[in-house]
Amino acid sequence: MLTINTHYNSLTDAIKWGLIFVLMVLGIAIISIAKSNIDLHLSEATTEIVSPKGLVENPNHIGSYGKHDGPNNRFREYWRLDKGEPGKPGWRGKDHVHHYGGKEHLATDTPFDPESPYPDTPSEEN
Image (cartoon, rainbow, N blue to C red; front, side, top):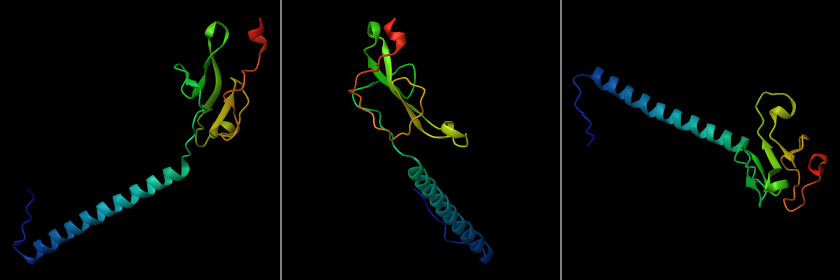
């Protein structure tokens, strides 16, 4: 149980404890305001990117999704999200996706149909 002593030995003690109380309240308010600004900033800057339905996450690569439908039931990447690193130039600084294991950088809102067949590649024909 918290008890507050309201008996002060002098006016100086009362002022000192009053200032401490005010500073504590202001400190809590400042921390609360700062935290809400940080939360607001994060919520404005972060957009939720959802992987296409029907794909499973590659256990060996975070952000990579595909199907086990390659030769010998091998995992093939259909869709991959690469998170941008703030301050980096070009695509390295922006969130982007890759389709079908390709190297082309695409905007995160590029349409993608997970039901479409995996494009044939020369390496899979051999």
